[in-house]
Image: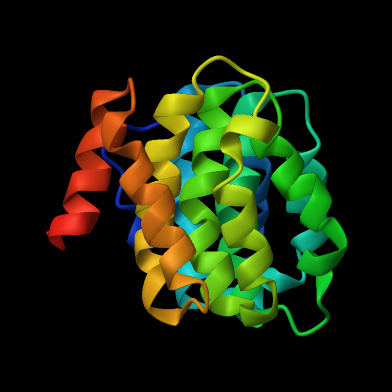
Length: 202
């Protein structure tokens, strides 16, 4: 019997066991919505391992995580942001295209915790969904206009990190460079550092 509320649990081992145990997988699936922080984190980390190593196995649960994206609970949203981004690798039914506005609506919200991770995961989505790449780049460079919270400058650091990963595959390289150069004077030290790092190719 696995105790998901144990600290320092081996989440990779847990994930592999869940691939062969429907009961354990069900526990993990329910665990990502747990009110207990340790249970939720262990479950999320194990499910994320599954999403990365065997996304086809998890793809059938897309609707479950899509529902979490719309939750008023920011922890649930955070988990959905990561899982759905990982599952775009096997999204043969183009389900992400149908929730694009909902996903990036989180970036346009007022919560820095969730918005920053939408920005960060954008590089994964842009890689897996090249038809959406330019649209994603435009959104990441429009944080000043779309994010409703007051930590826009910090969120740009996550956007720069994603744009740096998108850059080599992007058609709009000059636009990306110009945006990142404009962040060298950001009020956020983290954003300034990320911009400098990109320009120095560190």
